[in-house]
Amino acid sequence: MRVAIFGGSFNPPHVAHLLAATWVLSTRPVDQVWFVPVGQHAFGKVLESFEHRRRMLELATAPIRAESAVCDVEQRLGGPNRTIDTLQHLQREHPEARFSLIIGADILTERHAWKSWDVLERDFGFHVLGRQGYPTPPGYGAEVVLPDVSSTTLRQKLLDRDLDGCRGMIDLDVLDYIEAHALYRPDAP
Image (cartoon, rainbow, N blue to C red; front, top):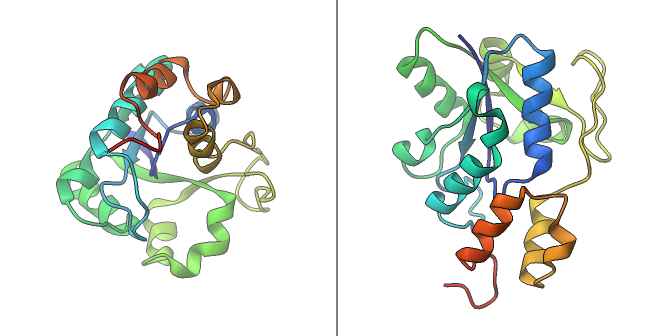
């Protein structure tokens, strides 16, 4: 089984995440995409609880449920994790699987800060997708640029209670979940 790992905060998950996974499933030799929400951000970013982010991912990925899964490995490992450690752990748990990694082209400019980037590239490989201002560089396959949607912008819209501004960028079930649980509000606990 060939599994592409898509890690991130997913705080909140949005349509560009789903589009990236769908593109990889449709154009790469991949059988499944496993979404891996961070348990605790390695650089100390404040996040909604793991449980909320996992549930929002489950809702967002419903259209591709047969080809995807939400994996809780980072929560099980505890603490902040580095990508190489997570992938090596998954490889030990699932020796029958061949893992690769989905990343945005913007990450390539940060590779010096990643633990064991060379091992990630050699042992796992990447599916690189362009992001606004960061086109897919030569040597990484077809140039695909995801829509300019970011969790940072969406969190601000949610904080400002601009739900209409979020429509079209967040799955409707996810938006309903956010509202039902009062997430991303200034008065939220």
